Length: 397
Image (tube, rainbow, N blue to C red):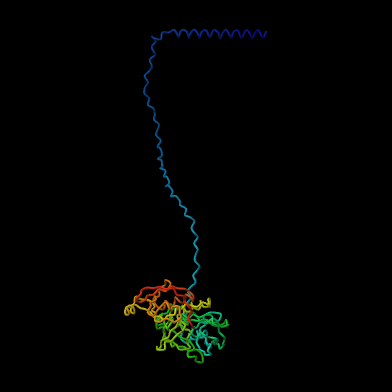
């Protein structure tokens, strides 16, 4: 019964839906058959313009210009700096010694001054002076004081008398070094002879005339500088001329300045002169003494001529071919110059070094020992410029 009831309901629905569908189909067909050519479109109302409301303008903010940063300057990295080495702090110059009164000066220098007595081969003797210039008992004096000595006795300021021995001799400048076996001697203060001025006060100390009772003191001034003395074949250069009294026995003693500094070694007095004495400049003497200590067997060179300074005035008066040089007044027999140089030759150069005077000749020989072969260039009247090789010899005596 229930099944039949449901089936009846379904049949009714289907009939109703079918009728509705037919009605819709009939309406659609009648609308499609209407004449479209005569159909007028329904009039449309004219549209009225309608004011479109404009939106209120919102003020726009002014844009702030953007400032672009400047292009950065490229950074150049410097190279690694070289480390700076600071020099050591310089040693301050020593304060110069004060000027002393003569009595104070003598009191300071006298302990370094010694008396030298020499016995020679022939049994004779001589006396002179010396000055202690270095530790170890080293004493500077003149060569002519101790040459040919077989015995040397050195008397000290404190009264001691000790034997001395020769360390070295330099005949070209008349300097000798002797040594005594004692280490506690006062040493003289070495000055600078290059700073000397003509007219400067000086004091000479020495055992003049070998008088007993201690050294003699004399005072004077520097009369001239760079003097050269020639005695036959002997040439002594780098001399200080002074009017301080220098007598036999003073030889080898100190010449000191007003500060008590050793600035010369007293060496000679001209017999015909009055109040004229000479001392070897300490800068040269000290250099030679140091060399003698280091090389006691080295002898300075020797040529064997009696020299004469050729000056422009002398060359003009005699019509000489050279304005400067060393003229030959004589040649020692058997010397290196014998048979090579003759009287009136003018030496102008040795081994490429100019020889304008006897000072230059002496300096050259001092630093060229015996046995050295040198080339001598010289003028000879009537011949002209010549050159010859000479082997330097040993100074006799």
